[in-house]
Image (cartoon, rainbow, N blue to C red; front, top):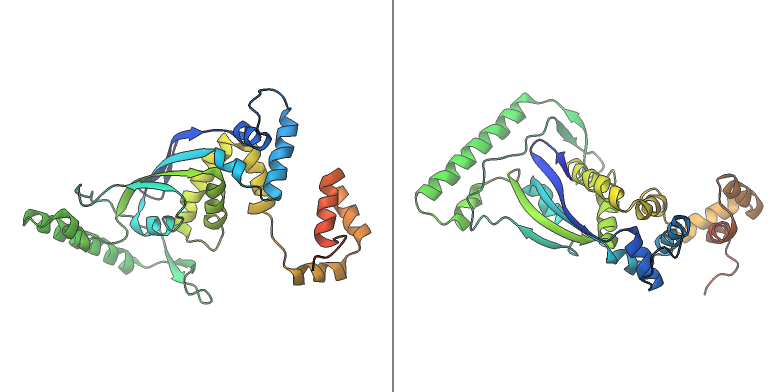
Length: 266
């Protein structure tokens, strides 16, 4: 399963160890098959997700082959819980492949590390292509002079493509996706996160459903935010709204106690 990303990149699934059933087995410490229904399995996975019982999700692992620009990969590798092996510029002559954006973005006014809106600038595109051409020519010249590959690569820019293998357990993969699918993440790495999300969703649909419900589209409330909601709602009104959205039983009681706890810890 391979998904094209950006102009020359991709995310390719190499292999998967485990499935939704692996999460369930780890949680129950049981290796019997067919002992529970899909509905019960889904309920257990959902319980684990919303209560942050993370270790059963670590029983599932994904291995990807990724091709991405160096500046994207440097952000990617800040997630230090994976096993990674990247192509080496010390051993290999790096290919003349550069990421060239279809459109430029303006510097965000309120976010020093972000961007906003599109900016059409033909001169900027020509400048980028000129730097790529000059840098790679310099790289080749240094190699021809007998300069070591590990030093010649210093002249290459950050939009050069690189490749790596990335193996990650599902718990930490969900953490990666929660951060890199966020609208505040850089646009380029979000495209890779979307591709990975598509693959993960196909292989662990029950876990993905719970992740989407409680993490990706959910939110954690501070004490102040809870106090504000308590001033606007009554338990009865909140319970009615939850029931109308389909919650019942213990799940309904859990949701009620998030805003209206029976007792406050010291």
